[in-house]
Length: 44
Length: 233
Image 1 (tube, rainbow over the protein chains, first blue to last red):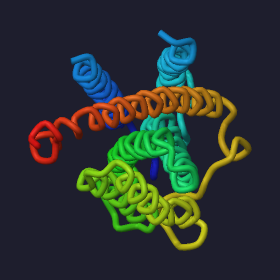
Image 2: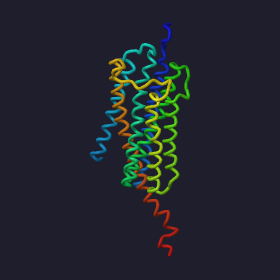
Image 3: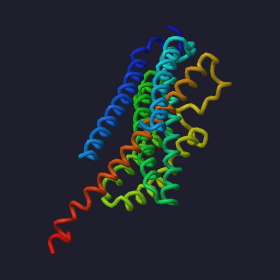
Image 4: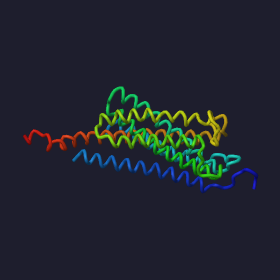
């Protein structure tokens, strides 16, 4: 092993990308759901 | 669907596709960093999140000034849209940073000046959203939101410049000249991709706020009628 060099670490990379993706998808999902709910109320 | 709305949806779609391309390039095509190895690939999502999060707050600052100046509902709706998306990106930024810190610094968190000011920024803008939810009157809510946004924004330049002004574990800002050419393109593509997605999300959140405001105006006379309505006289 080289001194001061990080070997591996893909689990951290995957975690960072997965959490970012989940956060963005979750927010967009909630936004669409809230928009639909408000639209339905407006039509009622 | 209006032409403007179709255009906004194109922003979102192009942003999503670019984010997939940029992330693929960052994960599999970009060169490995000499000391951090593959862990450094977190940068291709961490930096665009940071830049766009701070951009959201800067947009919110501009919208808040316009809201105080003109008192139009659209500026208030855009302010809350930009803040909500900014808070989302700010939260993701802190989580990504924590994941990156563990293998490189050996800790998940440190009360370093960059991390601390970023956490304060999240709490301040989340506080603006919380404050907003306590005010019933739409006019007063818009004024309070705008003023609180201007106050919260004081922390944004601090977050950006703190690594230059004080000693920090966090590195100072890089430029295209200080990183490998193979690292620049995934970073640029993801930054533009996230910017397009931010524009789409802020526009949708603002649209939601305007619909809610219209619904409130419809509900308000209905609530008032039994108490002060002329039909009771």
